[in-house]
Length: 72
Image (cartoon, rainbow, N blue to C red):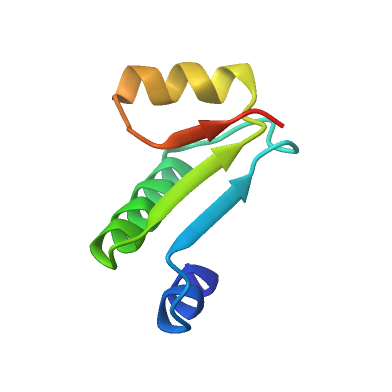
């Protein structure tokens, strides 16, 4: 979350999370992701995710979390 805050404070409005190494996300991790999306959007920016594991894609669909997903 500190990196998100520093990026926003520096004027960076586009954030990309590479999730290629993620094998599991728990409720705490999902909560942090939601907070990051909210902070970036409130600053007028966009947050995108790349290389999502299939499990993560399904979870985002179930939660109806609208985040850009990029394949890489």
